[in-house]
Length: 343
Ligand SMILES: Nc1ncnc2c1ncn2[C@@H]1O[C@H](COP(=O)(O)OP(=O)(O)O)[C@@H](O)[C@H]1O
Ligand SMILES: [Mg+2]
Image 1: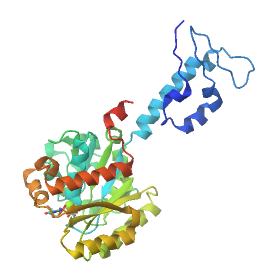
Image 2 (image 1 turned 90 degrees about the horizontal axis):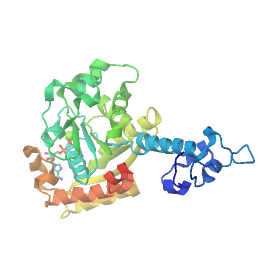
Image 3 (image 1 turned 180 degrees about the vertical axis):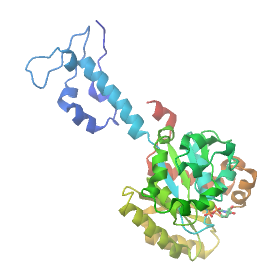
Image 4 (image 1 turned 30 degrees about the horizontal axis):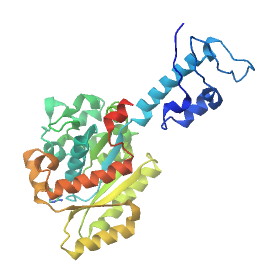
């Protein structure tokens, strides 16, 4: 004999997936009643009188529902949001933005994985991590010699973990050749670790090769930094074609999270014109925050610190904080991740 508190269906909260209601039978769950001293008052869907058998009883259904809910939250609701920062053009601020966004999210309490997918490994040094810690290498992931979890390292920013970049990635395209499924190697590798993070940020190389295809294959969202200069939009057509190709072939769920301007100079008409032109092309996808040209953003990598740690009061740090605010809203992330994870 044991006592079970009244636990009506509504107590499960608003995030209880309706598909589970369907799965367990809405009628069954809605008719759960208080059960004191092991008296089962649930009505069986097939019997006219309350069923008292063990499998139909309230306690049993209650436990199953609770376990299902916990599993669902762990596996689906709290799977990391994977965001790839991509632009085939170099020098537009992909790495600066990846590091700044990842670090800012971490400081807000989100668990973040920064994945440096550029052979130049600038994001890695940007957070003060060595390029080849303990000989482990992102390159080996592609040949199944290591798991992603083996090469994740911490950095000085709390909550921020890093997959360091590797120069060896340069030769990857040639070596993997036409191996079937080669575009989905990163997605597969991420499935082992993404439940440990709220967000995964991938810093893409300036190309549309195998590395970028892998990043777009693994990503739920692509975020596009655009330098506020005349030829920026022209260069973007190649990336948009690549995104369309990925959506049509191996990642139909890939979405554009947003486009934002970097190295924006509010004193020039050109920057304003580029903003207006980008808004005309992308509409709602254009993020409101413009990242200004700011010396602290170019200084901080040489100190191995993201700008939010190097100089939190700089215009660059404040702009990335505002951008992250917009991204949190678009990604639907909860502002108090620890509370959300514990719920
Ligand atoms: N907002 C900014 N203000 C000043 N310098 C910037 C800014 N964004 C990027 N930079 C500098 O521009 C250069 C290219 O930026 P980076 O992030 O490496 O571009 P990408 O990764 O697209 O090649 C770097 O030297 C970086 O420090
Ligand atoms: Mg870069």
